Picture (cartoon, rainbow over the protein chains, first blue to last red):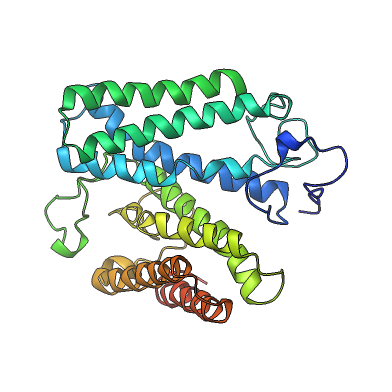
Length: 157
Length: 157
């Protein structure tokens, strides 16, 4: 990979695109692979909860609780990977479904992240509070909707 | 993918290979992709701490602390992906460096996981205790050694 990521604080970068962490001097391809990895971990953890919520597999209280906590422990991670130069149409060689619109509407994208993080945190809290499966089931739906809400707006079909 | 994962509790599976979680009815390829993703997230979080420890980039207290906590929040995740049928030589179509030896020496593999988790937890605790960079630096070395200790034994060159 020979593409060099432009420094995040270079001229012309809107404040809205600045990241919470000092960005790594990462190649765009690595950042894309990182965020895809983090999102894949989330999907793996969410999967069985979704299957239980939809009745495809039996409800297992212990597994559900573990998955809910695992999901909550990673839901803040993917977002730093959406750094400048890593969206569709930018100068990199990776495949990504992340639309350029993310860069045009960073605050909208951040709102979607916040919604997801809150829904996931709520699910983990409900598990800690030993809530009934009927309530957990609805909250899994809310988590899934928060995924979809962001995909609808910011991910390629 | 048409390969079906043999049930984990099928006859012939040693107790040592049983997973802490009820295993997903996952394809081996998905489990492999999951664990590689989780390990990649760990590497991304560890990377800048390693760079700081080696003097390749300046020490940034806030970023270091965030990375240490992020690493601690994911260090327990990859291991469920090493499920039966997902190692080198097993019947799947994915590329993996996970040696069949993992299945032959599961308790040894688990020991390595525990060492890593403990070293990572120690690093996060040191960050919470505002320890000096000189000490954090040494602990990053311990984390790195725990990665290497497992790779030396259980990962293909």
